[in-house]
Image (cartoon, rainbow, N blue to C red; front, side, top):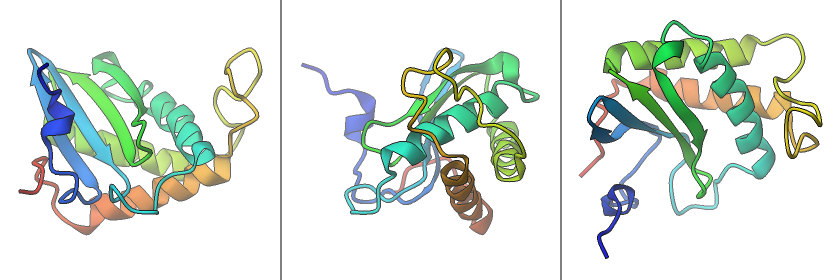
Length: 151
C-alpha cells in the first residue's frame, strides 16, 4: 500500500512552525505545527478542541475566507491542518497571524460552545485557546517561516 504524504516526513526533525504538507492542484495543505512531535508536550483535548473552534471561525471570516477549504486538528495533538485554495504563502501566513491575534484578543463567548452547535460543547476553554494562540504566534514571529520541512 502507498504511504500517505504526511507519513513520509521525518517527525523527529519537525519543530513548531508552518509547513506546506502537500499541493493538490489548486489546494495547498498547510501543516500548522504548534508542538514538537513525539514529546510529552502535546495539546490536551480541551486546548485542541478550543483552538479548532476559535481559529477555524476567525480563518473562515478572514480576508481569505472564500479560499479556506478545511481547518482541523491533527490526531497526534501536535498541530492543525489548513487547506487553502489558490494559496499565496505570504498572505496565508499574515492571515493566520491576524487570526491568532484575534483569538488572543477575543472578548466574548467561545464560538460554537452550545449543545446545538457542538458534539462535545462541555470540553471547551477560551483561556486554553488564547494561551495556545499566544504560544503559536510567538513561534511564527520568532523566525522566518520557509514553509519547508526540516531535512
